[in-house]
Length: 173
Image (cartoon, rainbow, N blue to C red; front, side, top):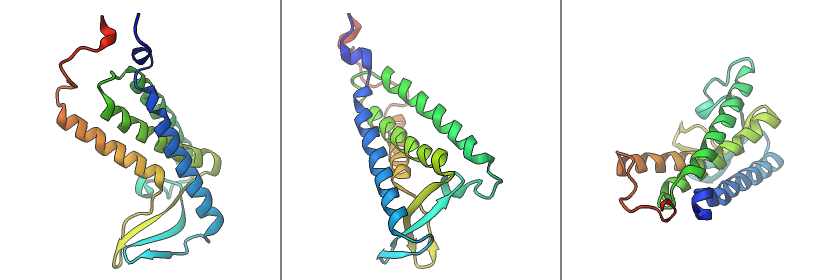
C-alpha cells in the first residue's frame, strides 16, 4: 500500500500557496484602503509604493482592450491552478524544490485571480525605478509567480532530463 506521502504527493506545500495568497490579499487591501490612486509614496530612492489598477496581464499586457481580457486571464489562471495542483500531487517526495516552486506560482496565480474576478483588475503597488526609468508596478502575487518560475527554470537546468535522483521512492515497492 502506498504511503500517505505518495498518495498526496507534495500537496503538503499548499500551506505556502495559502501564505502567498493571504499576504498578497492583505497587502492589496491595505494599499487600497490607505493610498489614493496613482499617488506615489517614496520608500527608498529606487522604490515607491503606489496604488494602480491593472486590467491586463504582466506588465499591463492587453490592458487597453475593451474588457474581454478580464475573463480570458481568469480562465487561464483557473486552468493553470488546476494543472499546478495535479502536478503537485504527482511529484515524488524527493522533488521538494519543484514543489516549492509550484506552490509559489499557485499562490500568486490565485491572488491575481481573486482580484481579476472580484474587482475586474489586479491591484499593483510595488514600484521600482532608477531615476526616470520605471519598472512596471507589481504585487506580492507577482513576486510568488516570478520566484516560482525562476525556481522552475533552475530545476530544469539542474535536471535537464527530468531525473531528480537515482534512488527509488519508498512507496514504489
